[in-house]
Image 1 (cartoon, rainbow, N blue to C red):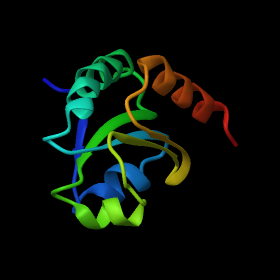
Image 2: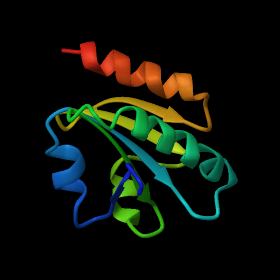
Image 3: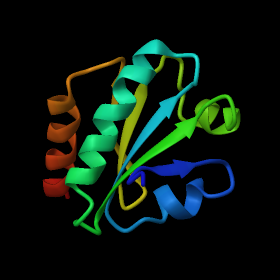
Length: 112
């Protein structure tokens, strides 16, 4: 069973922006090869963090929710945005090492 939340236009507000804690949202497309490479790494991270109710790893297909991609200025994918209590803290564009995403989460924990 996946530990990654699947987001769309209907649940983005409640599952990402209204979430009390840190939400890492991966904006992706099914045809994107770097997105395919990132997906299992983020799933592993989601499993590692599953016991922390204040951290959520989520995915949003930009082709199914283009209005959200537009709202957040997504021009290249994969594109990961870290939200804390609904506020955008960091945006990571392109495929990075999993340590980059872990570091962004850690930094978000200590951000005011």
